Length: 239
Image 1 (cartoon, rainbow, N blue to C red):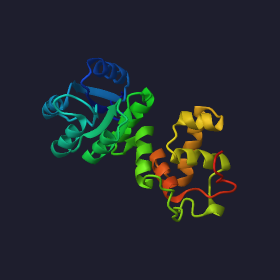
Image 2: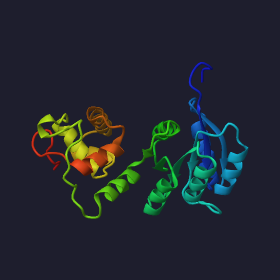
Image 3: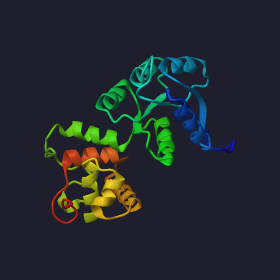
Image 4: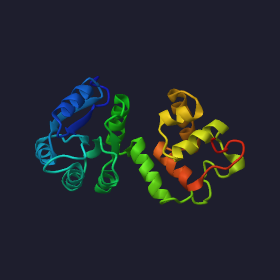
């Protein structure tokens, strides 16, 4: 990293599995924009390390299930004792208790360990900026919570970016992709449903976010759940 460029994001890794800690460290250390400041095997060790690390890390990458002190408790303690450190859960557990427990405790994000490396690095940068980062599984759970069990999307006025069917900025294909995002589909699932490549699915999502003035696919999923999409050109339900 150039002395004149932005400083790297300082990251603490917290995971009870030695291979996972070492693997994450090696993965992140090759990124010029990331600086790994340490690693810990559980929440207690992480708090001890945080108390001795100056300057503090920007982001703590935290496993959900660990001995002595799990990720949810650690994140809660960090919020009280180290509020400037953004916590991102990185785990193998696609579990409501961990997802909502971590977010309620103050986590800035929730990702699964099969997240591609480039997406993980991007998520660390976003969390360091104070943004919320949710993987597909956590985003789908959030959409279900907003809708309620078995509930149809509530009728509501569309936001200013898309005030009504005639003014909808989305193309027919983009509307299909948006509906699938609202259902919690991953890029791979969208690609399979619509017989397109994953790269094309990502491009459509980027275009949709730009047109609607939304930040990420989580906001898009919530928008679809609240406002729905009109039938007809630019808004037909995918088949």
